[in-house]
Length: 226
Image (cartoon, rainbow, N blue to C red; front, side, top):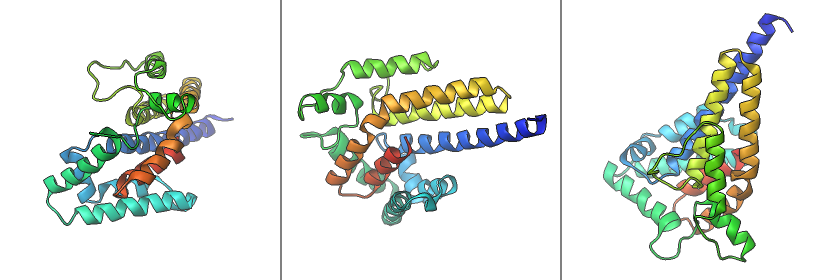
C-alpha cells in the first residue's frame, strides 16, 4: 500500500472516529441531569440538528424514529421559556432516574448487573462500578473526585467511549495506525463488557416509564450504537 493510500485510509478512519466520538458526547451530555445549556440546545433544535449531520437516518428505522422523537420534544419545548423547558426535562429526568420514591430506570450498570443476579433486586456501588473505574484508569482517564455521577452511570460510560474515539482519531491523524488499532480494540472491549450488557434493558425500562419522548429516544440510540 503506497503512502497516498495509507494517508487516505488514515484520514477516513480518523473522520469516522471523530463522528463516533461526537455522537457519544452528545448522548452523554443529554443523559446527565439537564442544565440550562441542554435545555437551550433542545429548544433551538441543536440536538437533532447535529445528530442528523452525524448519523445516517436510513441506517435503520430505530435511528430515524429516535431522531423524530427528539425533534418532537424540541418543537414542544420551543413553545415555552428556557427555565420552564429545563424544569420540564428535570422533572422527567428525576422521575425516571433519580426519585424520590421508586426509581423507574436506574442509569447505573451496577444496578442492572446485580438485578440480573438477584431476581429484580438491584444494588448500586457494587464491584462492577470499581471494574468500570479501573477500565478508565487503564486507558489513561482518571476518575475525578468528586464526580458529578458514579463511574458506571450510562452517561459516564458513553463519555468514556467518546474519549476513546477522539484519542483514536488523534492517533490516525498522527499516522500511528498501531496505536489507533489498540485504542479501538480497548474501546470495543469496554463496550462489550460494560454498556452493551445493559443498555438494551435500560432503554426498554426508560421507554416503559417515560412520559416524554426525549429520554427513550436517547437511551434507544445509546443501545443501538454501543
